[in-house]
Length: 558
Image 1 (tube, rainbow, N blue to C red):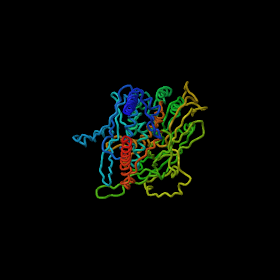
Image 2 (image 1 turned 120 degrees about the horizontal axis):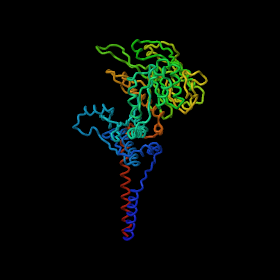
Image 3 (image 1 turned 120 degrees about the vertical axis):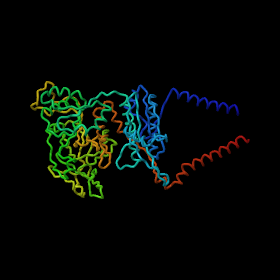
Image 4 (image 1 turned 180 degrees about the horizontal axis):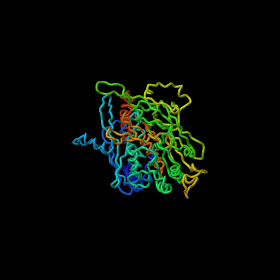
């Protein structure tokens, strides 16, 4: 009996030791989740594999958090462990910035704010007792002498913390892999910001430019030289991979159109942010009323040839962003009240396209509808107004007193869902096909390489506000209502999609089904929950112990 017991024990020990030794040479992780959240995409694996030096990741999600943030912390750690298992050069640690009590909290907050790492105040609820905690939902990825911040918590207007965490977990793989790609690779693609036709000043696109230059070369490009040297201007423009045309207000000459047209025909990517109606919120706030009228930039025939038409109407949407207006005086301070402004639609993406997948609300301002025309170009509607929107023809008077309007449902019946951002892909045909050219060009072509463009019917989508010192604020932040919209993320996604050769943007479409604990239900059934999670396992363990003891006594008492 003893000999057999020794043999069995030795066999088990040999098997365990053998498995442990084999595990040092053969490593395998199994993703048993239904949504395959821990299965990295091919793009991620490719980027991670190209990390040849130590890449350090400092995660600031460490401390006393509510359950939702604990879930975000756990998911972040498990994802980083998956990265490290694929490439040991990825080294990460979790840091609690508040751990050292000797550090001045105000100085700490200021240092984080200066780096763009905005903290979040969260409330801890424990059976009726509430305490406030500060969370830094950020990470820093460092590779050599380059560092980049990684946002771990997505901003979502009106969403609960649990909803934000679910959306953030879906975004984690893209956030980290994009950061790894940024710090580990040198810039290659070049972006031109078009000037010369009354486009937005540099200070109004400063935050966009500052964000884009982390991954791409970016610089201004003027069409002023087209009048004298059109061929040379086109030659230099072709050196850029993407051209951004941000809210032009002056007419394009036929020669300038031909330069842009041939850039597109030769495979150049473009982002058009167009105001088809002349109306500005800044001037309206000063005068209280203004006349909105169509703006002709001499581009209608070009867009028509490419397969779209931007109509000279304004979209009035019940799903609107607020504006802040002075409503009276109280003592020495002016009182401001927020009103919904139906000429400023809040656009919530409903497309599965990776450009807009998992995005929060995007603020538009005096947007126009985009009509899709039939041709060979593939058209994907990225953003539309809500079903409760209608068109207002121009010219028309716009008055701030319109905030007092109370719309009726019948006004919007049979209307709504007007496209305001469209992706065009394919081989475009020149607007000058079978027409007299504006200037002679030996390399002129009626059609050419595959290309892509994104047309947005509101130039203000890319425009950042200025603070009281006339310094640019973050794109999408409205200082009057203290609200951050998803304009910046949308614009960066547009750039990444048009210039992304390795499919990084496609990671954004990954769906994660993350179950969250219902706190209210737990508190309502607190005793029952304790019995199920703590009491029953102990009882089962006790019964197993008693049964094992009885059986053992019976066996060896004979």
